[in-house]
Picture 1 (cartoon, rainbow, N blue to C red):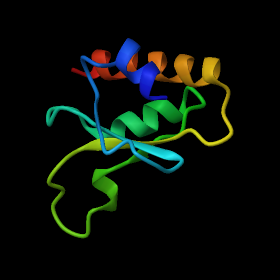
Picture 2 (picture 1 turned 45 degrees about the horizontal axis):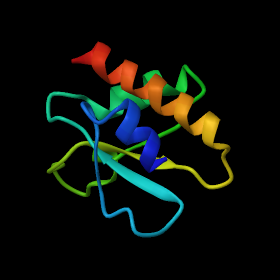
Picture 3 (picture 1 turned 90 degrees about the horizontal axis):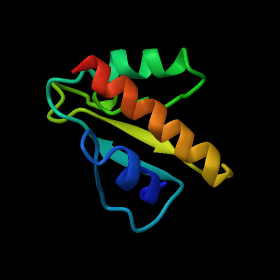
Picture 4 (picture 1 turned 135 degrees about the vertical axis):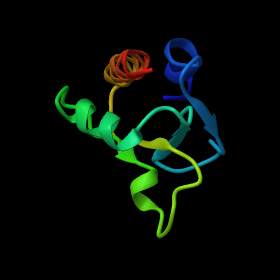
Length: 91
């Protein structure tokens, strides 16, 4: 997943703290509506979680939580390419 983000989406996603787990946090530019993006992604059979939807108060950052457990590398790469295209189209 990290390699796919770096290769296909480094211009629209910033990843941090990638040390462990089955999810990756990808921060987006503030002008991207991560909730709307998650809805558009679902129409493409991708299901990232919106980071701003998880804040108890006003969100301080927007982004996506990307799950990758049990997924094939080629499927992950295609999903990241699709997400990157959706982000670019929304900017």
